[in-house]
Amino acid sequence: MKSEVYRELFKRLNKPEDIEKLDSEFAAPEAVLEAVLSQKIVAHTRKNFSSITSKTEELFKAWQQGNTISEISEELGFMPVLIARELLKAMGLSKNEVKNRIRNPDSLEDDRLKTEIKKAISEDYIFSPIAHKYQDEKSHLGEKIIDRWLYRRGTIYMSDREYIRVNNILTPDFLTSELEILGFKINWIESKALFGSFEEHRRYMKKQYSKYVRSFGTGAVVYWYGYEDGILGEDKNLLVLDYTFFEENNVKKLFNLRLIK
Image 1: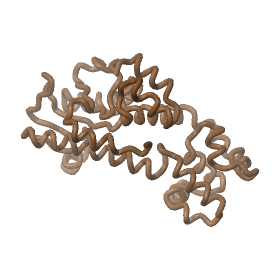
Image 2: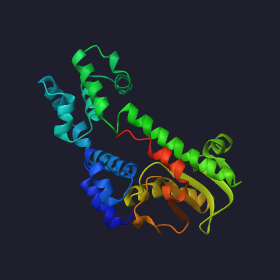
Image 3: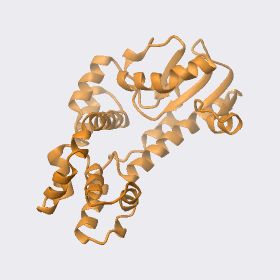
Image 4: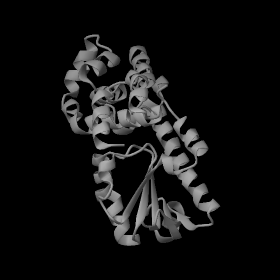
């Protein structure tokens, strides 16, 4: 995706209702738009949520005065499960207790709190347990598609789980041998069930890819939901691919794994 198109899309995508409005205008699959929206919300949260964590007492007071978790979420501009977590912390629950209550709100004794947290979970398509489950399924399916693609080509490869079991170090999702893609000799492949924006790509370059290049040589990253073309050429030792490189039927299964519909 052209960087200027991505920036315009990023600016105009603010809520799930925007996906259907914009998919035809930008000629992009709805699953790609959903990935960009999710990325925007996560980036906003990463940058600004500390302003909420420092004011949990005020949040608790607002709830005691009758404001619901959903109302507080909308007013502050953060996803409802995040607000629910901070509220539970303000009530004196430990980190593990908060996690358990979000996973099992029926364990809460307060009926109002139980009802509101259930509602928050149903409304949160980014940070709720079911949203995390969907993301895990997407990641697993993306890796499965690559696994089958390598197998069908007779490529010798090892998954990260197999390599870690033998060598006990962090590795890419796949280590490959005698594989060439688009003229690149590929020694490893990393699968990412997200959109490859410039910011995300830079973050992963620092966190993972540059280390993989140093350890294993030239490799490839697959951004299943597309990427911003500004990332191309960031590193001559890294090939960037997306869903268009793989068989349509397999990609269709991945794109059908959507929480926002």
